[in-house]
Amino acid sequence: MNRGQSGSISVQYKRGYYIIFGCVILMFAAAYLGNWMLSRGYQSMLDELLELNQLFVEVETTNMSITDAYLYLRENSIEGYQGGKENIQRQSQLVEQQVKNEYSRAKMDLTCMTDTYLEECDKLLQMLESYLSKENPQEISNADIDSQYRATQEIINYINTSFKDIYSLELTVSQKREQEMEKVSRNISILQVGLLLMVLVIYLKHNLKIIRNISESLSQMTQFVEHIKGNLYHGERLELKAGEELFLLADTINDMLDIIQEQVGQLEQDNQIRQQIKEMEIDNLRLKNELQSSQMDLLQSRINPHFLFNTLNMISNSAVMEDAEQTRTLIDITAEYLRYNLDKLTKTVSLKEELDNLKDYIYIQKCRFEERYEFVFQLDARCADQRMPCMILQPLVENSLKHGIHDMVSGGRVIIRTQAEDACTVMEIEDNGIGFPQEYLAKLQSGEFEYEKDNHVGIRNIYMRLKLFYKGKVQFKIESHTGRTVLHIEVPCQAGT
Image (cartoon, rainbow, N blue to C red; front, side):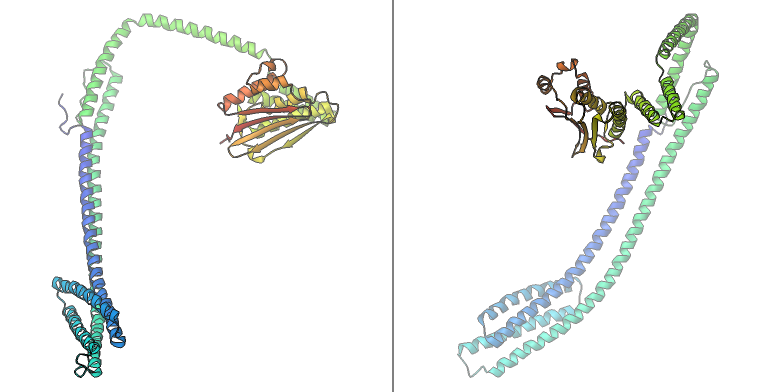
């Protein structure tokens, strides 16, 4: 069998990915080059405007020093002029560099005027220094100084006018450049979109070719399998040429077919033994079913919850017919209480469901003991969805009735309290009974529950169930003395979904 000339499927996919990767790099390179050119153009325009503006600022600052020196003859103004002169010359050189890069008669005239302005300012300062030195007072008069100062100001006016004209012209040129750069930006965007479309076309064309080859190979495999289903011993062989992987798959299928044919022949020889084993298995299944049926009959012979509930329902209806409303209510609540215990015993419940069941239990106890005991609920509604094992609170309340306030003729009180805290839920059962013996409390604090085998087996059972359910993250405390016993349970918040 000859291998496919197109290579493995993974190599074909990699080849496509390399093409796409190269196109993406080309697209990003074009985008980067275009953005760099645009950024450079914007920066060049901005630098030219800033250099012109800075030249004007330096001229204005230097002229202020000249005016101050002329009016007040201050030495620090003369020093300020010297510094300003250097700044003007530096900025003038930058503008001259702009002229070299792109000739502008207006900029050239501006630099010449700044040079002339500095020359006139130098003359003015020399006249002021000579006037102050009093070496030749007859040669330098105030009129000469005034005339020289006016000459500098006339040049300043020309510079201001020239700067405004140049700045307006530069803004116009900048707007034209900006329009050109926007055009370039659009062309770059069009190029990017074109490259992206090209990448998508290449990717789809390449992948469709691979998928078509795979589909044709799968179709051949399907036809081959159909032939095998009709005739296991036909002489055809599966040949796939879509890629090395499918070539290996075809070889594997052909080898498996050879093995299956050999095994089928062997299985046909052992068919009689297999049939006997099958019959024995059927007999074993029949015996197992009969055993399960007998076990089911044994379970059904015990108390049937449905029969119990139907009986309670019949008694409730009889109570209605006899106008015994309280008896009917007691029976209904008793049925609901038993149904909860049977249905939920092995399931997790919400704290609200547990409290509803506890209220049914308390109603039954009130019917039994009438006003002998008082039950108080102090509940936090935020705890309603707390998940917990079934039958936790009812045995604790029953424990308070049985061991705490059982001997009280009146005044017995049990408080059921819930509280939602930051990351936990607190449940408390409080009664005003005789309390726990100190020996039991000591064993409880030390983790020993040996005393419970006498009177308080339910507490150990509840503690172990909570510890297992919450993976050990349970705080179980009992505070007890004569007249007040509080059983405190603190578990992690675990709301239902």
